[in-house]
Image (tube, rainbow, N blue to C red; front, side, top):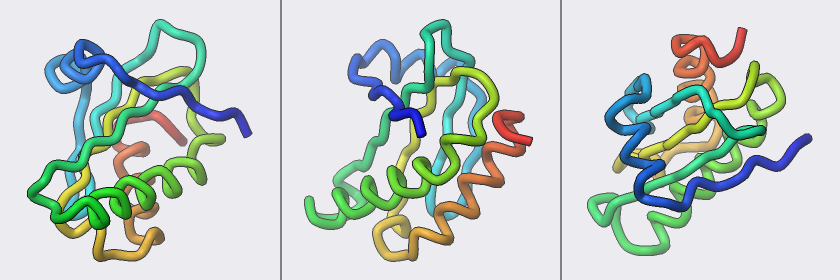
Length: 111
């Protein structure tokens, strides 16, 4: 399994927010765009609305774990931004995985 790179610059996040395709569900919001770079890059955000630092970090861990299970099925190279929602830190990883898979299919990222 290839380890994906991380989006770190604000301009990359903004590009995905404004020009990327998006899908939303109860646990996560997914923004995706074809990447000019080689490989897949991801960024995860969790605002203070989610809760204390422990809850925000758990939400990010759950999203990262779900993504790592689907990463091998991605066709091509993409940039992704995942936005955690309030429910994300309270649900099991399996629910986030199911929603992420639905988003990827709707966006045409996986078959």
